[in-house]
Image (cartoon, rainbow, N blue to C red; front, side):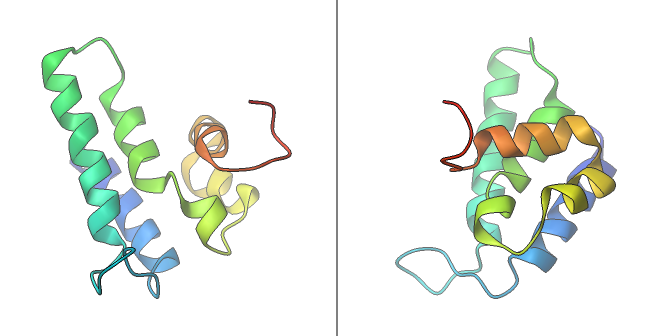
Length: 98
């Protein structure tokens, strides 16, 4: 896993989610995002048959389109079309096919 990809995604998410807290507590929303990323990392060590760099970035950014003012275009500019499309696929967007 490329550390700079993790750090770039976490910094971007931290800036976008900066006022958001986890449900039910006063912890920063980054705790949730880091927990999801950790689940992906643990899964990778059980089965290394997926792109860990891609998966960790999606884990960190998965709520950014639905919970912040970040747009698809901004996400695409910062991370590329594949990451932006992956995040959009994970978003709760009723306009997207299931």
